[in-house]
Length: 139
Image (cartoon, rainbow, N blue to C red; front, side, top):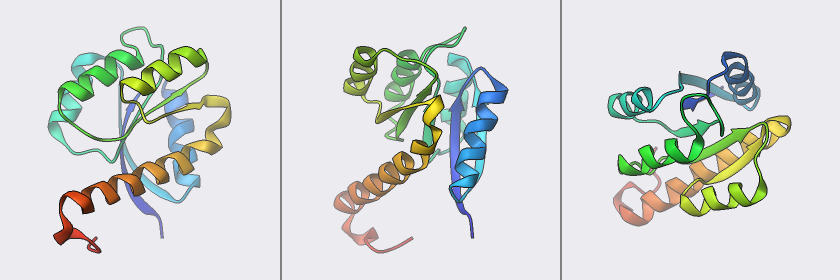
């Protein structure tokens, strides 16, 4: 049985978005996603619902991953933010991770995406259990 996963997908390419969704489905997830590619659309999506994970391309015509990450941080949302991009300089990737992105997955290595998401979801659950011990063991 597929596990539900709500994904905010910050991506300008519909084809690339569908490749990511397909990879998540192949990894055992029932994906409910919204694709957006502007600051206004990101803010709107964050205000309307809770996301399990945010996946962002790095360089897009209307926004880039660091700008998207700042919008998420300004919203006081702790949802894992993962960059999936065709190319990113290693120094830039490390800089964005220091700013709060959880990981970087190259688009040509999408098989790494599901393990990264599973690690982040597990880590988030442990953090929530530490904050609220009454929820420990509950789904």
